[in-house]
Every structure is written in structure tokens, then in C-alpha cells.
Image 1 (tube, rainbow, N blue to C red):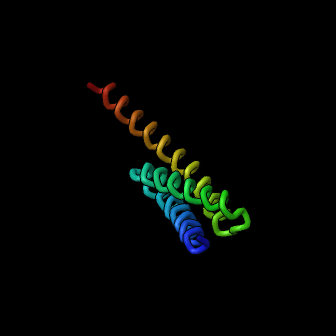
Image 2 (cartoon, helix red, strand yellow):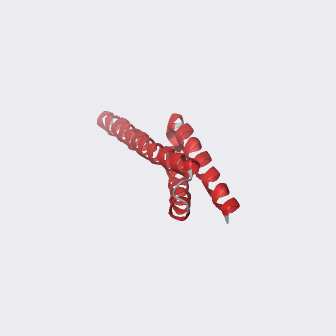
Image 3 (spheres, rainbow, N blue to C red):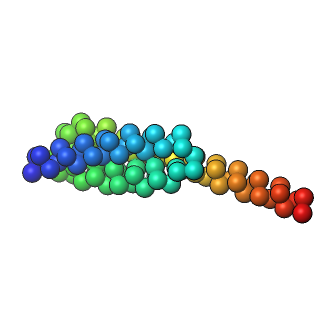
Length: 92
């Protein structure tokens, strides 16, 4: 059981790091959101079973940060595309 928790904690940590990388790829920020949610679920599962697991804590924190920043990036991209499309409509 401990090995499975370590694998989930490692997966949570890796998914949190990868979700942070997707902040720089504006068009694919939604992929970072999905990865952060999956990592958050895995990290919380491990936290419930063994609260002293530091890798799971780090994974949860990274996933929360990645989720927030990817969501902000995605919203900013949607606003920019919407603004660009509305300015093009002005010319036609």
C-alpha cells in the first residue's frame, strides 16, 4: 500500500510541474488545467491515507498553483481572442 501511495504522490508532483509548464503555452492552457485537476485528486487521496507524505503535499501545492495560473492564462487568451474578433467585426 505504501508503494502505491508513493507512486500516486510522485504522479501528483509530476503533474503539478507539468501543469506549470503549460502556463507558457497559451493555446494549451486547458491541458494544464486538466493535468492539475488530476494531480490534485491524486495528491488529496494520498494525503487522506498518509498525511505525513511530503511529496504529496508538494504535489498538491504545485497543482493548486498550476491550476490557478493556467486558468488565468486561459481566461486571458479567451479575452484577447474575443477582443481581436470584435475589433475585426468593426471593420466589416
